[in-house]
Length: 263
Ligand SMILES: [Fe+2]
Ligand SMILES: [Fe+2]
Image (tube, rainbow, N blue to C red; front, side, top):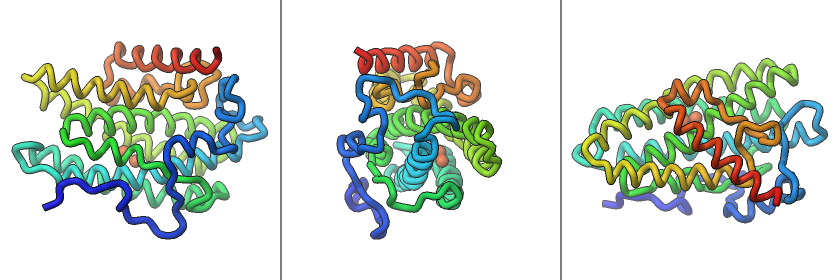
């Protein structure tokens, strides 16, 4: 029986537009690319591209929610109980329910913000990270790295909703943020549990997390400076089982990525 499901075969209707990561970065609406030499800057209501930026971010969240649902669902199915404990699968099943709800919220929120499905393209990086043959690497790549990023994104968008006077946006982001903290915490807890007596496997899993984190710090996209569009959410990451040293590491990585594009 097939145990992994290729990203190309994921079910999408004709509204969706699939793109490769390189194509997405070359989208002319992406200011970070247009102004390759300058950092993209924090998303604030007074920016001329604030509405476009917020809608693009929301569309990215929407497709991320679908893939998080698909990825967590795969983890319930792909492993027997010796490879992934039943309690882990129960956590992933709960996550599926949350992500399905987030998908619905995101569609409605996208409409509220004036966007529609397919206005921006979809890359399948999140789902691909959820195809790793080792469930522990799925937990670090998806639950800790990408959903950790989701914590930063939701918190940033929640703040943007507040500063732009949009209570619907900040309310929805706040609810989804609460769930994401739980998903990241599941990743942190299961990583510790499953690698308690296997330091090599833990090291491999954390290295995978670092690779994914680095990729998504591209061009200073996420960090703690004003230039970073997505702000690192220290408080919520702590609640999700991140040690301060781990958050510091992501911050340094982001600074390096920002300096690389400023050169
Ligand atoms: Fe979600
Ligand atoms: Fe999630």
